[in-house]
Length: 419
Image 1 (tube, rainbow, N blue to C red):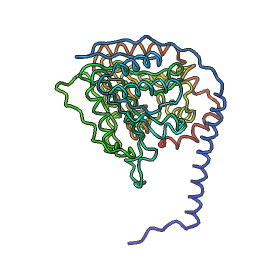
Image 2 (image 1 turned 180 degrees about the horizontal axis):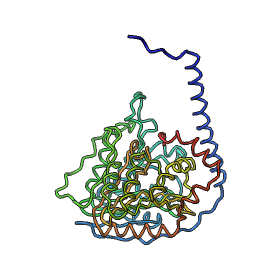
Image 3 (image 1 turned 45 degrees about the vertical axis):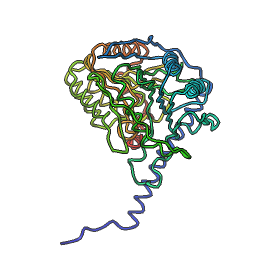
Image 4 (image 1 turned 90 degrees about the horizontal axis):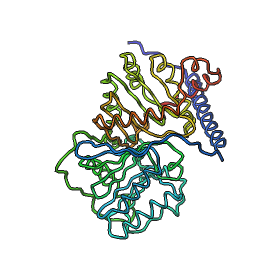
């Protein structure tokens, strides 16, 4: 048997050098674009955008309230915290140290002072720029900083690199909040996001989601020795509501499958809103196949998000989507950060997961999946209101874009798997 000839060492060195140069150019371009975009945003005043009042829809034995404006949501979250009598479970990805962050911190501290068991989780990496002074909490609050480097010494274990991107609040086992809103002043009035308030037996699974993450990591609370967070088992369950949660440590990512199943079953419409659109090809193919079946497929994304590189990379999917008949709507004047979808007037989801690799196959995420015509109709009305503030991308406009734009999109394309 003749051995296959191997490449000469100098050829291998040249290939490695070329790959490093190409990747280095991509990274430098991405950094440069981010710095320029950050400079351009300095001092820029936010523009108004359409919002709707909180709307409550009966679902099963409880109800779901939809929020599209941060000020309305924060007021109800603070009210729930101030009315707590037994337990508060609070988890967020970003917790700014501004006036809004201080408002939440004080409300949680006051609850702990009156004897309420207060558990808080925030992501350490996402809050690196937040003042260390803000991160000093009263001893009565049980606070877990999800580690900046969760892998520890297991640097090759990919299961340990997910960020905690979830946003959860549960009070006294009677009311729960989940959705896309982080905690901060900008999100209160300048960003367009979606969150829901849930009552009834559906919130039990939301509690369990918090407890599972807390119990998996509470040993990281330096200097603290405490029992795990134990919850009573629910006597009833809500068949209309399911919580889908990604668990990187267990290599479980059901949110992607949830989306694909709903899209593949669609017969009338698929309306998706997402802050960042960086899917895998299977996801793109599912949208294209639905459009080919005559389904009204609409994708609503920011015209300009807070991550300019993600915007440029996501455009690499636009040609095939437009050619398949998918409508692409770009929200203007404000950052749309919502992560929602409705299918066929029956199925809907609201949560924390974007349609990108980090959310669908990397981070700790949670989405509520609801089978209810009333909530689907409410979210469709929200989508239609958002659509009034959008610029629709046409095939003619897309094909007429400048050559340098096409070149930049192609150059940044290989970074897709990293976002």
